[in-house]
Image (cartoon, rainbow, N blue to C red; front, side, top):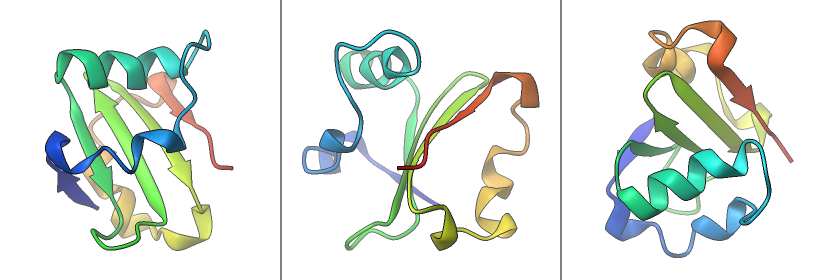
Length: 87
C-alpha cells in the first residue's frame, strides 16, 4: 500500500459515505482533522483505499486487488479494532 498525502484525496473521498453513523465517522474524522493517514494500492486509478487513524483501519474497494503483503502495513493495529468495508 502507498501512503497518499491528503492533498491528493479529493477525487477519492467519494468512495466513503458521509454523514452516516459508525465506520463513516472514521473517514470524516481523518478528512476534517488531517490526523491519520490515507493509503491506496496504486496512485493512478486505485482499486483500494484505506483510512487509518490510531488503531483503526477502514478499507474500501476491491478486495481481490490486495495480497497479504499489501496489508502488512496495518499489522500493528489490534484485530479487534479493524473494520473492513469492501463494496
